[in-house]
Length: 64
Length: 141
Image (tube, rainbow over all chains, first blue to last red):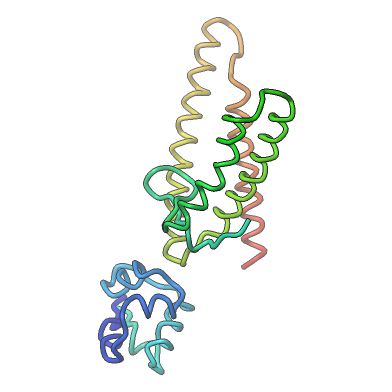
C-alpha cells in the first residue's frame, strides 16, 4: 500500500500531530503510514481521507 | 481514582503493564504508592496495619488494572501488542513444555510421575483462555 498522506497533509498545512489527533491515532502511526510501512484498516483509511478533505479513498491510499 | 488514561503508555520494552508517559502519570503513581510507604513507616505493627495495607493493595491493584485496560491505543498499537504478546506466550509455552518434559523424564528415571501441577494448570488455563477468546471473537465478528 502506498499513501499520499504527506502530500495532502502538506497541501492543507496540517502537522502530523494534528492529523493523528483528528484521526484518533498516534503520531507514530501517521509516520508509519506516510512511509508506507503500515497498512491501515478500512475504517482508518476512510477517516484519514475525510480529515485530509479528500472525497475518494483511492486518491490517498494506492493499492500496489 | 481521579486520573486520565492519556497520562500513561503501554510498557513495550521492559515487561508488561503501563508506564507513566507524562509528569502527571508519575505524580499519580507516586501518590498511589505514598499510603503504603506511610503505613510501613509510621503505623504500628498490628492487625489494623495489615488490614489497611490489604485495602490499599486492592484499591491500587484494581486501579492499575483499570489503567492497563483503558490505555490509549490505536489499531497499530493493538496489532503490535497482539503480535508481541503472542510471541511472548509461545516462548512461555515452549519453556513450560520443556519443563514438563524434563520433570516427567527425571521422574520416570525414578519410576514415579513427578510433574509440577502448577505448570500443568498454567498450560490448561491458557488453553481455556484461548478457547474462550476464539469463541467470543467468532461470535463478535
